Image (cartoon, rainbow, N blue to C red; front, side, top):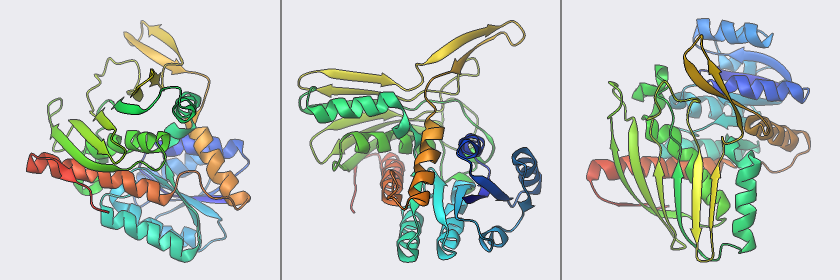
Amino acid sequence: MKIGLLGVAHMHVYAYVHGLRKLGVEIAGVAEADETRGRQAANDFGTHWEQDYEKLLATDIDAVVICSENALHREIAVAAAQAGKHILCEKPLADSVESAQEIVSAARKSGVKLMTAFPCRFHPAAAAMKRGVESGKLGNIRAIQGTNRGSMPGGWFIDKAKSGGGAVIDHTVHVVDLMRWIMPGAEITEVYAEIGTRFHKIDADDCGMLVFSFDNGVIASLDPSWSRTKSFPTWGDVTLEIVGSAGVSKVDLFKQNIVVHKDATLKTSWVNWGSDMDAGLVASFVDSVRNDKPVAITGEDGLEAVRVALAAYESAAAKQPVRIIR
């Protein structure tokens, strides 16, 4: 199986390539508009660099991994679908609902597989929480509290023309997807959000508090802020607490770690061990392509997460709850 990398702006591409290589997948090229970044990635991955992604799409690759800036997802993904290449697209699927819909439609029309990169689904603790909810042991779900707090990444992530926003579009999508996955069939119908820039001198939002109303009566809250300091032992967190009528379930996806204290850096850090969510994600995608199976996380899943994140921005601007119309 041959995969082309279309865009390497997002740091997750390195974890994905590591997982792909373990599966015997050939990295058949890097397409990246930024020459310095593209040449560096191609050198790191032992492959060639193209500035024009169309050249890579014209080869015999089977699939692509898109890790470009968010604003380029639509253009690249639609071109990949039209070229007949299966697609694993970094989250968020797009920087607008319309662009996400266009990607989904293009993949459907061309008959290619489209998977959104939400690796948290592949963490054993998240899967165990889902099984616990589905077993009924927690009773009827009443509320969910989630966090995806991280450090501010800088670079193109804080350039709204390239990212589509700031912390809210970057981190909301992960946890919204987990919530929808844990409660199959439930959809968010209303969003209320307070969003601001309180931690860094940047031109994008770096914090927010979001409240969701689901159509099954569940109320959920989420903190997707870039509020972790430089001294924090890892880049951030992903946590969920589910409150049911018969019990409460909590998960912290980065709890498995070795704590390291270094004199050289005067910093404490975490070295994660055990499960590898990114490896699980790419293994699922490769299995879908190789064995012609449905993808585990669809383009529609990516679309719904984008829809909620952008509704949060709309709510914050309007200073009132926003109903989601599908």
